[in-house]
Image (tube, rainbow, N blue to C red; front, side, top):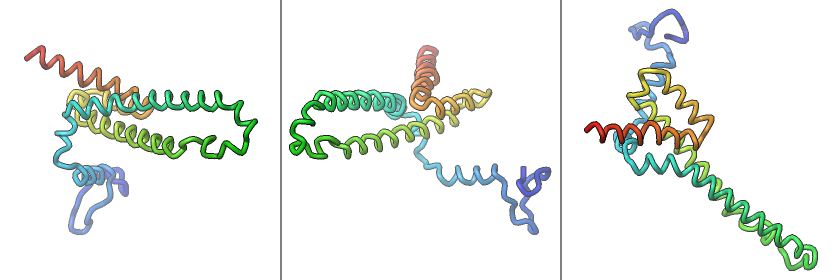
Length: 167
């Protein structure tokens, strides 16, 4: 379907060098950005497990570190009033740089997991027959981390076990 003329199909003629269509643009874009070894990475058990478990693990590690920081601040809050000159801003703020670095790594891993599993679901031939592809992609977007873990368990591990049992 052409954006300039919605009722006419896309035709490339001598007079019309090519009308812009979103579908054709996306096809050309995916051909350009698809490296040759994506199928190797998509079928790697290590990367599938890493991108399924890493966002959840980083969330729990971040929460544990946050509660340890809160415990440290609350346990030392009585000392701040007595010797105000002794405590500098570094001791109050702690290692904020490490916290920001951890947040940056967590965001990169989470986005990487999101992209990895959207590409994996789009290439999954079992999901092309029905609307489950759309359901999985929406689950990935709105339940980031948990959605990837559920997809990994249901669509990858269970399918792998079924293939080994039938073989």
